[in-house]
Length: 493
Image (cartoon, rainbow, N blue to C red; front, side, top):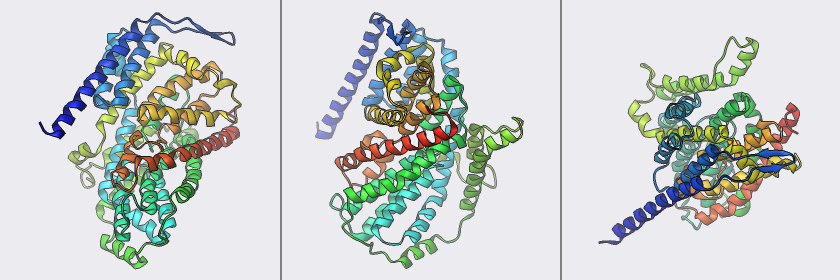
């Protein structure tokens, strides 16, 4: 037996043990006696039998999600099966809670739009236009990649933006003849291919998977209807602050060893000329994209002006944009291409996450966990509270290694905590929702990091060294945005 085969067998054996450990942990929690009710400040919080069963299933899912012993989507389907098996809710209700949530259609629409944007070539053309603006100074090139990554990922998924930026960044590095792992400029540019999309992913509900999940939870658990503009009012300023601060951090930690790229402005012009004028496919994609974004932005205004007569849910607008790409005479995408580009496993993860999250909340397990894990947060001064929430969620992200998993687990707990302390749920859950997609420290935290890491220009240690500082900077940016906008709206206290 050769070495790769032995390695594969060892890896499979390890996965079997992880599955066994997950099952044992779930059963162990299930048979434990119900804990004594928690009493704090005159409030008694009890963990019910159904709530304990939810925590058991949650522990099972977290072990499998973290170890990836089975694919994320398969674990998610196990969760859908286990909830009725443990008698927490009947099977029809579990499926209805997950698959019946309108936010699933929002996610599908955004992923299809992302696929169309990437395949049409619009992303490549936009990056070349940015390079024409910033010139060939290496520090400005890094800023340009951060900026264009952030602006694109406001509207299409982080992973798709990283996939657009990577080949262009690698092309620049090869032209500059910089060597992988030995060039500070190479490290900074490749990390910027991940950071830019991560910055922009929090700016709008369309930016990243945890965003629509947060909106759904806030609607169903706290009765708050967070519009596209309400989300942007906090997410966009935080993004704008992170771009220059992240740029300065990269230049500080990885100062470029070359001042200018050996690429003249006329070469960039030649690359743009080679692309030619906008193709019909690019024009169609651009028009659909602009219409979709416009409807997202004007929907709350139209609803207010018409006193509710005109209602354009952001989920329906996203699905409209995605499905329009397949219409005859437009046909930007084939269904085969969409099947290849859309992360259907991610959609299943969201379905199961919503089902489990709702059960954790409705059985009272979320409230109990909130008091156990974060019961002291109400005593923290309101100025420091968002900063503390962001840092805590960032640390949890290191454990869960997934944007969606982090959002799925932590948001119901924080909403329950907000209700217990009679705080505004948006001001508590909002910072956590933003942080669920800000994965700066470990390469493995999100595919957005894995894509540029695959280029070989930086190490896991390089990203962690810069990522720890960027996490603290992001916490500051989100806290400032939440405090300033929340104070203006009168919702933060």
